[in-house]
Image 1 (tube, rainbow, N blue to C red):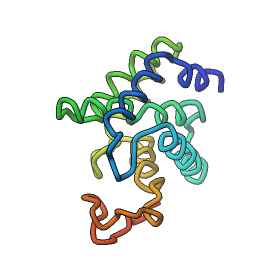
Image 2 (image 1 turned 90 degrees about the vertical axis):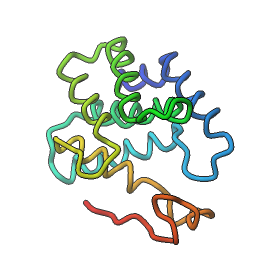
Image 3 (image 1 turned 90 degrees about the horizontal axis):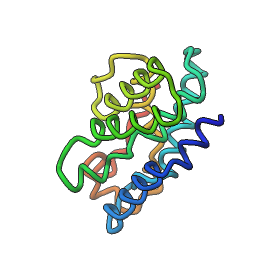
Length: 159
């Protein structure tokens, strides 16, 4: 997984994670940090294996690591973070040497990871699902205030 290591060491990736951290420094809810990205990657890869999808591990991990890198732009400019993350990911993927087909697959999954029912491929659906079920909602001390899972309603695990 040499290319995944290159993502983790890429200066723009590190910069975007720091921007996310700064934008979320006073956030009480789930943050969009490396821990979340790795959790999404692990869950997504498990789902890929369980569903016997022909998606290489490095593609799954690349999409998961990059899926929220534009979250800071949503806080700053009000833009959709999935769209921004896809744009930012394209440059990083190109720098690292992912080919056009791989980039297209990853960027599409990132772009479609946000809204339920917006997934046009199995990979997009897996990224969406893993993003939701990787959250540690049962341990959350402020779940009652969460706009997504308020009033203690935990996410439904659909897989």
